[in-house]
Length: 268
Image (cartoon, rainbow, N blue to C red; front, side):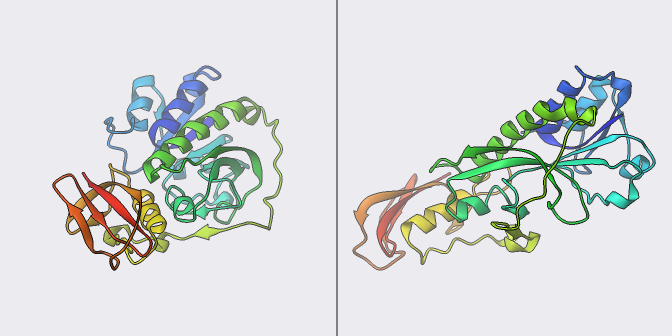
């Protein structure tokens, strides 16, 4: 038995692939609590389960089942001791042991990373610390926003699960402990998305990084003077005025001075 727990295109696409390997009666779905059963900017996993005739269950109903549990952006804490099964796996959107925890679409951009990745790992008693099954690395482009990075996670995460799923189902995988060196963790409190503020008393590069790290159209866009920011570009003009002085302004954009270079901010 395979249980897929999660949301969005990664859960939908992995379910589609799983149906080529297993009869639908051998698959159980656990959609996230926020799943309304209707497609939006992401496909509904609940809807996909209903369309395919896949039985849906609550998490507690799985505790006594002999099965493979696969967490794909699942929204609930999984406690291994509650499960009879020991085959519990998670897809994490980072190259572990880096960026355990939350906001893996924002912190790599804020930290000027040029690479990220996805990691398939065993679920243990801590947060994203289980043995690694497999990883894929990919490039972060200079103009990537949080939304761009998230879609890369979906793409490569789906690829990684599909590449390993048959071996997972046949219990033919081995994991290895995560390295101690290079680990990092970000808690839910590390970014307050209900009160996002851009620190404009920074270099032009740091301002643009903040704007792109917080740009995810379906959830939020950073604001300035009550207006939503679409994008920000560093000009090749050195700032000659104090930071936050307006150099030029119209309905489409504003050009601001910073501590080093002027930046052009495009309004939504």
